[in-house]
Image 1: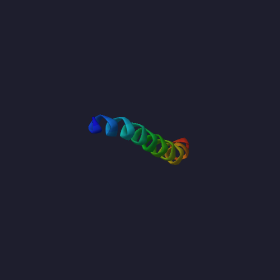
Image 2: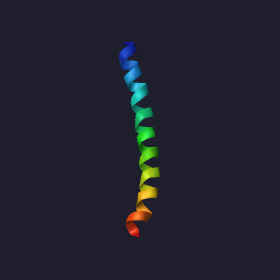
Image 3: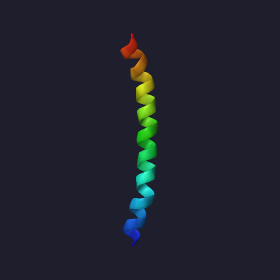
Length: 35
């Protein structure tokens, strides 16, 4: 059962990290593509 708990707690963390990185990269790449 511990493995299932780790998966449930780990997935939201990974999603949050991906979301933050996605926003940062989009903000940096966005202006470059517009130029």
